[in-house]
Length: 117
Image 1: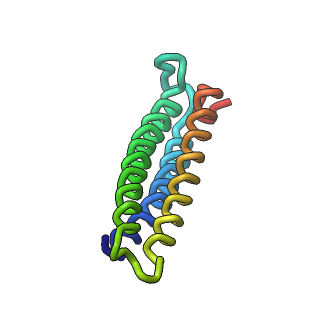
Image 2 (image 1 turned 90 degrees about the vertical axis):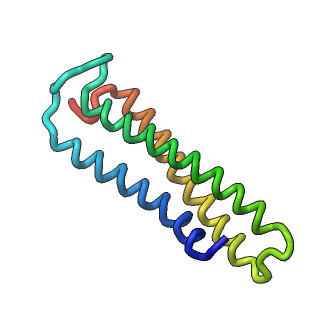
């Protein structure tokens, strides 16, 4: 497990969160009422598709971190414990992003309008 890989595991949750905010702000500029398939505003549908794909990426990151965690704890391991600490930080970041995405998807489904009045 390289230091670069651990750095990517720390940065990817931030990139996912940033992409979610970017898409939400970009789609928010589209006017309301451009179609309502399945009772959802089209904007909410796009946002839900983005959130669902990002949740799949978060699930993949969780699997990678779990595998790296097992590898880092095996002998000879990391003498300083730095990699394990960075993996713990990445688990915390992934958890926060997952909670945000689930909350955001729930808010979109509850409103059904994607921010339209």
